[in-house]
Length: 224
Image 1 (cartoon, rainbow, N blue to C red):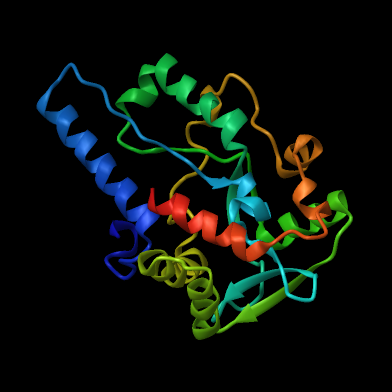
Image 2: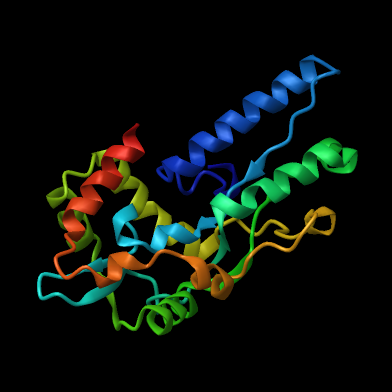
């Protein structure tokens, strides 16, 4: 991956987006009338939902948990650019369509409703859903075993392993200016607290919710 100078090569969901963006830029260079700009998606707010194969899962004993991969120093300390992808992604797309300044800038447009640590994100979720979420550090071996048990494809397992280190050392957007295009937004995107106000959190109230089935569904969706 270019942002890491080649250190991280298995964060596939970032890597292939980068390749698509590079292809678009090359096409724009070859055709002067063709405009190309990327609008990169931040951390989906829905990533936290169990039904999406999210980061919060239910253990065998019925307790909710969030696990981050060693050697992250503190579970949940990593900040992420949270975005309500369903309601707010379009705000940045509209800005690019309406402003030539954004179309002509070589920098990617980065989406972010709020920069928030996973720790604070979990705190807000606990308060709104009325649950307790255990935070733990797990070894790479334990994480791999968990993903394999959910029939997760190998390339997604590799992605998870590199992703945690990438986020800790470089940040979600690799140190780029997240908010450079925000002055052109037609409205303010939602914060995490605002997203929680209208979010469907029913996953957390289902007594028999099966996290392993959700993880398997997530793996299948990622392949498609």
